Image 1 (cartoon, rainbow, N blue to C red):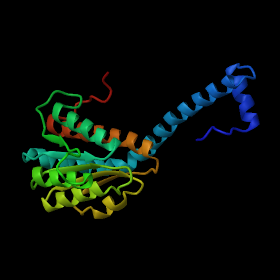
Image 2 (spheres, rainbow, N blue to C red):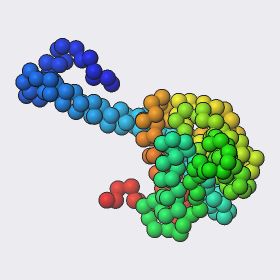
Image 3 (tube, rainbow, N blue to C red):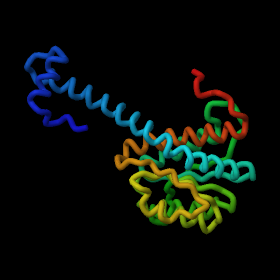
Image 4 (cartoon, one colour):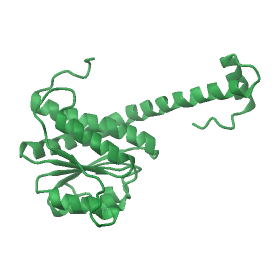
Length: 224
């Protein structure tokens, strides 16, 4: 919600609410407060609406990860831009454990390396070098159109790997390239910030689901 260019009557309400005088500082602060609150409201609203839609594909993602780790496989994770940080975050949780102590699971966050190739070719090269049949490639993207991720996806298919794609904005080219045996977790939103927030929650669900499958359905959701 954009609060810039607020109508005169809204400006007056904001002034009265803040107890501010007619100076501009009294207007800007409550407007910023409301803008911040709107981020929380929009994020919570999307997560609430997406919960039922994403439950089944996330369940399928957990099963794909379980098939991988119980057969001695590993998870390769990648994204571009801010999604690369989410990839590293997931790998650390998957290796070290989410909310319970458990044996380590194999996960590697891929990143662009100086391999003498253009950046868009780096991820695919790493998938071909590290990936094997039975492994999983976890892709994180907001729009599904990055060439580097598309090449990584095709490299995973060449290695007979399962792909789990967390996307937004309909999934783009990534969603279209997925096979029936792959898993698509499509966040139903167009704004990158909201997509990233739900993707992080989805990663938590994947980690928690694997832990529950491996160690039993312990009620950790309500613990402090």
